[in-house]
Image (cartoon, rainbow, N blue to C red):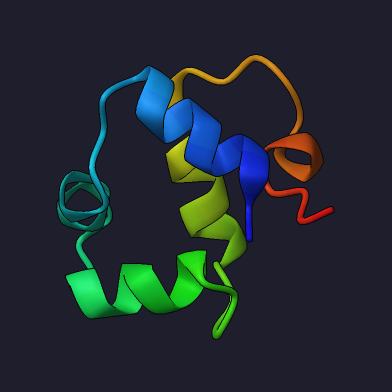
Length: 65
């Protein structure tokens, strides 16, 4: 689970559905990725960082431990 990513989504009031829409992928795909059943592409990681206006690194945002 991506604890920091989930925290930032809540902080920015962005739902999984909204994130999926912004990335141009399905809700089931975003759910799989957020549940660590498949991986985010680097392009998706960069886009999410931009959407959230996250000031830290991509590594920090997608940390799983």
